[in-house]
Image (cartoon, rainbow, N blue to C red; front, side, top):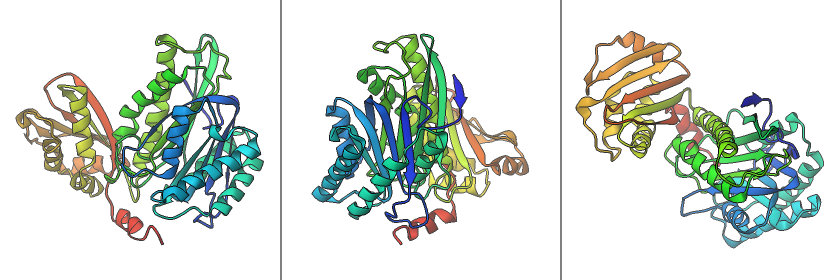
Length: 407
């Protein structure tokens, strides 16, 4: 597998665009289009929040019932959530507009929205934006990057990646983009993510691969404990790579899953590190746990702890908060066996040994915790399973950003 330049336009047959439509913002690109010149198998995962935005309902229906998909239209600024039947009608109008301009069926158009909850879309501006997107679409790397910028809200950086690999002697490419900075908490994939690939793969295995990957990537991130109403992760596969269609598990499927997991892990970590107001990516790796699920639960409990997140921001080696977060995770374990370390580019140090304070230098610990990427390592000494979760520190700016988000 090779990491290559680009994002959603890296795979054969995919075009994209990002334009200014002034949905909420007046100084940035705020709509995006991803389009395939050929029909695509499509798979998706969606929020588990009972309150689901109109685009989630629309896309879920397309994924489950449509014979294929060919385009995705996304807007920022307004989430089209808690908007009732009118919000759903607007999803249809978006799809109808894009379908007419692209000469594809209405049920081949997926839609996405992110932003303020409870406001209706300015549908006329949305339709005008779609017209601009169709005119601007291109298969260039720059077009893919513009699309990645067009789905940002409070994100400080756009997020995209692409990889290539071989299946049956054919070069296959997989690229993706995502957005996510606030209202991020693992419970499916708490953000918007769009993955494109020219691989030939059955719809059933495409869905299985995505669902499995999500549990170890997007489901393992948290910024603030809030599961969004709009969480959507879609993957489109147009088969233009020319490989023999992957219809059963084996070497080809494993290669595809490896690439998909790499892309999703990269995008998940980028979102965690770009949490609203964050100054550091904060990871927790739990190992030697009894089961994989125990390791996941323990790791997520630590990165979700506001007290631990605040300690990371303050570069404070407050290991007691880490042990506390492990303790209320719901997993039963022996505290007197647990070891805790912190690690970064500045080094590695043990803070806790067998549940008690280790002999360490506060000065060295602070130096390690002052890096932009910090990892907490937890040895449970009670098994062979491990898992990693990603979050960020909790800063004053998180409150500032969310105190006046609507205005």
